[in-house]
Length: 162
Ligand code: NI
Image 1 (cartoon, helix red, strand yellow):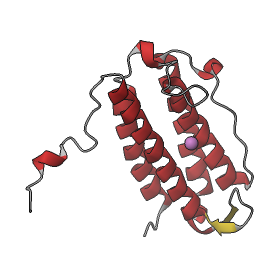
Image 2 (tube, rainbow, N blue to C red):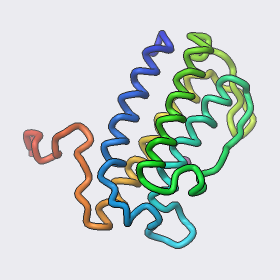
Image 3 (cartoon, rainbow, N blue to C red):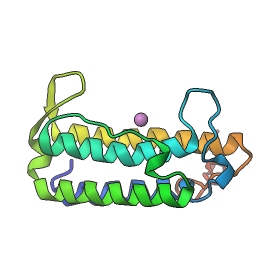
């Protein structure tokens, strides 16, 4: 179990670093592309991940859910979208560290209205990021771009047990 909020910050930092490995190989031509009309484009996923961090830190700090959107004005090009993500990530870290260890145990409302401990919201944020990182990986493969390996190895590198 996480005891210190700093441990969560470094855990989530590592998750974000791995997400950025996927983001950095996105070709410019993919930013406005999505596999299905009306669903996230690649650029929207990146901007959504940034805005979601701000949403999560806001509920952890202030107990209310607000979301600022993922429009192109937040970063149309890959470089701009990455910059937006960096800004949101810094805001998240600052907010979490400001609340301190209390963040893990304080009661926070879920989107469904009941209360949970803050660490569950923090874990939900991590799961949310992983969900969209997998989506990015799929988008890349659909466009013929080889995504990075999440931990640097392929499953074929693990000894086959049969
Ligand atoms: Ni999402």
